[in-house]
Length: 292
Figure 1 (cartoon, one colour):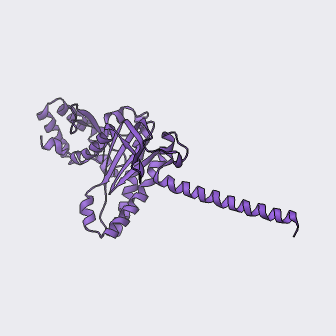
Figure 2 (tube, one colour):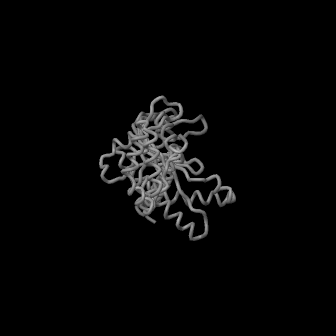
Figure 3 (cartoon, helix red, strand yellow):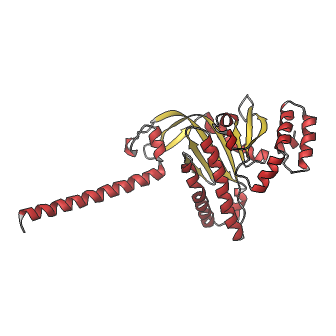
């Protein structure tokens, strides 16, 4: 075998090793990307995971979404731990694409809950919520066919400034966000149970929507969140609801908005009378009004 032939064989071997190394590196980066989204990297002005340092952070205005499954505790009690885990995996697979399709990404999964973030116009997270409700409805229909429990979700949405960064200790790091906006978003999600609404959004999200004509909202009133002195306006997103529920809520939306306006102006007797009239069409009286 000549020298040139040996040299060619050596080059082919080196090229093969380089290709394999590049392939493995790509796979490692893809794997890391599933733990820390590329969008998170970009917002911290980093190109690679290895560029991070503990304590790296930046301040951004983001829209934060919190969601969870209704009556999850009761649902999980009817399943074994293995079945429960498989259920959550299937559920998250159904909704995961929604975030990425609408310029967002999930930051944290906690039990049945998801915290996600969106950068830019608030139309994107609103559309993500609509898509999410539809995906869950499809998954729920599949479960009902198999004689399993129906599932529904509640979602809260708020826009505000947060600190994004890398936190942890010497042994484990994670990307996370902190800030008052995160706490408010979580508490707004809690309002969905009080109002019996699938989605509740804060007024700052509502006011920043660029194309409001594409969506349907109704005013729920002013509320004071725990630990806050000021009241805030909250709205219910109607898009994404089952078609029959959507039509009924749209049918009464003018009277409902008038009633919430009366209630907001402390004309309680007039508001209650109008709400009772609404209930003859659709039993949609918020629990907060009933218990006043």
